[in-house]
Image (cartoon, rainbow, N blue to C red; front, side, top):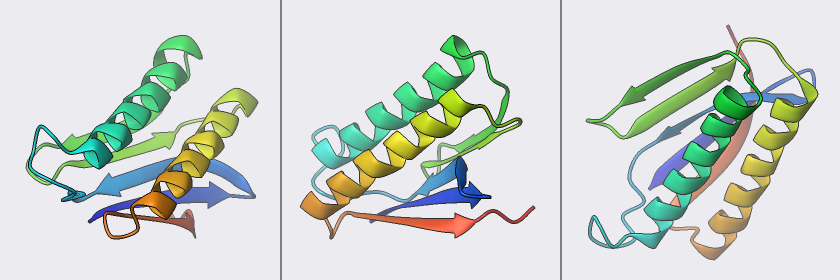
Length: 108
């Protein structure tokens, strides 16, 4: 199962951590994994390359973990993170065995 944890600070989405494998089917044919990966890359690349916002990012290829945290909150990036969260919640409804999405208050 893939787990997506979204961090919230004062009501704003400010980052996330995604860990695990969806295990929908074999690697290379896993549509749940592909959807999560595509949404993650679109979100990170838009915030960093289009909105030109700084963020702390970390990936671990062995565990398939990705973490992302805004350095400074801006309206566009916070909105995109919220949209990303909402899309993953929609995907979770279709594939509840493969994806779990939660929110947490951010702790430094």
